Length: 510
Image (tube, rainbow, N blue to C red; front, side):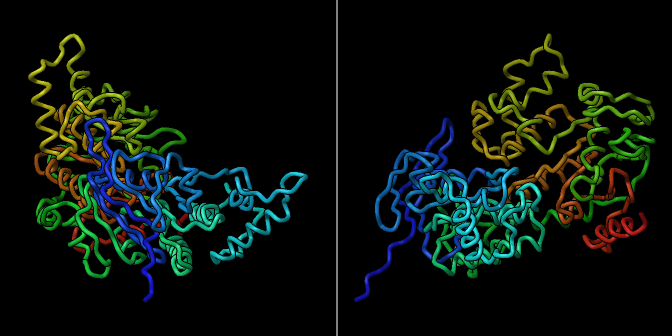
């Protein structure tokens, strides 16, 4: 009788609490050798916490962890690595000033009595990369000269130089294009076929279906299902993640089609020749009541720069702005706020939420600033506002005293949105509001954007995902090289290819 092979990783009853948050609630999880296993769930579902327990970054409060059948209790990342568990994260932890070989072998250099044996170190680096199908890489190339995709591959090479039994890949494709994703997936399949157990975390459903063999779905810190990937369709995955049907998602597209309109009447906000030397060329822009205007363009095209000029975060050195038919000067975020113009930055942790403050204080911050500190909100006013938006936006956990830093990225974004909704904006500028979120969190944010537009708020929506821009926008402003190159009314004939073609055609005219 053949003895059954123990799973590469097995978690039984794993639990971990943070103040006000049950991050893992008696989770069972199994990862097999020679499989790509996707870990799915909304922001805040417990994915990152599970990974950190597995890799020794967090000690669990309760539960049992077994690696190759042996019970382990990791007190550090080094202990997990020694047990054969390596991780590669979205932001690669490498040294841009060092070569490929030096990065691959960092901490694992071959040594002799004289010190580091660089010839043998480079040979081992080459052997490691060759096993991954990357023998063509020039080991002498400085890391900072490589594309994000190749840097990710180097990071995987570094993780595999110690021949791990388990490899955790946390959002490895977030900054990669389709060709680069294909390169990465070829490496992942090589590792899987060699017997490595791979835990794959991604917000991109299409990639999960393309690369994974099985998936575990978490919701609110609990394991709510383990499935062969091929046994589910995308709708079913989203439904399980959200814990509800997909009527919201299905309605969103149709409601936006009905809502779409051509600009009419006096603009809520109009800018003429708005620009700043070296930042964005002078341009014209109009926003109408209840309209969603998408800003589409590649990263670095000027989308964010235009949004910051529009909202006073950066000061324009040319142009004029009108609210209705009244000329105004929007030179700071404070003056923008007085005119009910709100801006949420892409980097919500550095320019948005204040992690050391509670949900309650974050939500009421702008409203209190608008009223002035000599007119403090009453406790009842504050509680009514906070409770309302926690419920309306589905902020989890629904505890206003929880520090924002302990919330998931998606819930932090909802807190930031609540802060601006509390001031009842006439114009809301959202820069990458769904970046880094899972599909269900994106659906929630998109649905709120659509609802706000239906209620009369003028919205600027910026996203690197052109599909998202198309789904929500009435009009789309296309930018390139820090200037506006076109403006398109949305409709049935418009597609992502239309936007890409416009950008490409403009490039050909330069």
